[in-house]
Structure formats: structure tokens, C-alpha cells
Image (tube, rainbow, N blue to C red):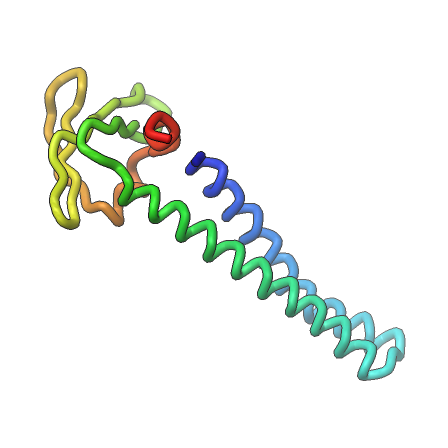
Length: 134
């Protein structure tokens, strides 16, 4: 399971969904100017709405997979601090797991942190750590 793949997929479908939402009034305007029948315009809008619903469902499914990956980490798993422009990557390992928290320790300097399980995706990259477990 590659978390990064699902995160990219979420971004792609969010872009498509936003594009289709913007396309609805544009298509209605073009159809009105072209003098198309109301039923033809309605069919086109229903098709676009079906596509938007498909994109939404795909996004929700991908989010669920990514969220489940957060909760599948175990003691000894490595997580990687997201890269910043001026700071090198930091590697942490989970040394203890609580009900809603992970206790992380920096491999280089021994710094310890408490991170909520549902918030770990905001600051840490799990893609390498989840692949290693699979």
C-alpha cells in the first residue's frame, strides 16, 4: 500500500471535481446561447453531476485508505518528518502507542514527541514506513 499514491489520487480527483463544478454554469450558458432544448441541457448537466458524484466517492474511498494507514502503524515503525526547504529530513520511530497517540523518538538526537494518530499525516510522511510493513 502506497499512501503517497492515494494522496496524489485524492488531489487529482479534487481538481477534476472542481473543474466539473465550474463547468456546470458554463455549459448551461453555452446551451442557452445555442438554443438547445431544455431536456438536452438537463441530460448534459445530469451527466456532469454523475461524474462529480463518482469523483466524490473516489475521494472518500482514498481518504479512508489513507486514514486506515495511519492507524496501522505499530511500535518500531519509522515515520519521516516532511521535508522543508532549509531543514534536512528527520526520521522518527514509534517507541510507544497509546489509544489515540503515537510516541515518537528522533533517531539522531533522541528527541521525543507525542503525536495524535489522526493528525500524523499533516506533519509526517508514512509512505516509506507503510510499504516496509506490507
